[in-house]
Image 1 (cartoon, rainbow, N blue to C red):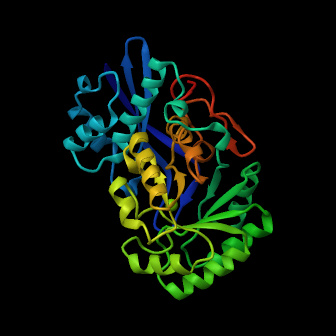
Image 2 (cartoon, rainbow, N blue to C red):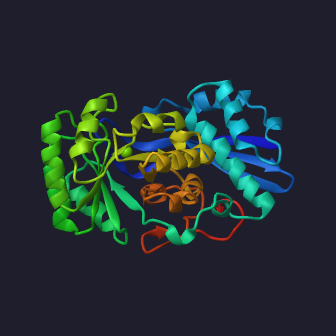
Length: 336
Ligand code: MG
């Protein structure tokens, strides 16, 4: 097996602002694993606030011995091996895991969603995210979001209500809200949640800082709409810790170190009675299709990467009626 990789700068269509950060591009590492005549594709999206970078990913990949990745693919062993090389680095570990799944599908001549036991008929509609912006830019973004069944709005600034009111003047589409840890006062947050419910908001991601476990649990106990932990949940051991703190978790391949552990997180969440949202970072079709292969096992999907970026090096995934359409091609079903 041969591993090759190259850095890639993924450009965003609009400057993206959330409660704590703002950016116009995201560094990626695009990775290929070749075995016999097949190539598996993987991707790491290294958003700056997660602490990974092209340099860190390169140093990590230099340590990886691909002779360990023999067929049949033993994911628990491979993830344990990658974790033994360095803690953290979940995005670059995800890139390897995604490429292995793509390769496995191609070797078995089966689509990844089938290998993972997903039913394409259960694919949830995906939301498209609008960052914090001026009313003019928001109007533009809302017009670009036509065809989506849900819009996700980033809150956590001083004018949350104004932002929602602006969006409501432009569209009736149901909303998801992501506060990105931006709310601090419990009572005020709960008042806002009741107001947001009247505005057609269906769920709220990470209202208060992840370190405020009691505050988030207090809101979850009282909120009329589901509260979802995102920043509070990275990998499998975190799922157990947030039961009772949130109604559900946001699983992302770039946090979970890939498809294998993401599925373990979904299984664990179900056992604990937690809902599951599958989300993404700024990603190309590669990581998006990897998440889409698991999305039918989740309650909600927020996989808008290909729609928010302007230089996706792969063909856009098939998308109809606000949903990704899983195809029968072996592996991820990625077209170059
Ligand atoms: Mg989030």
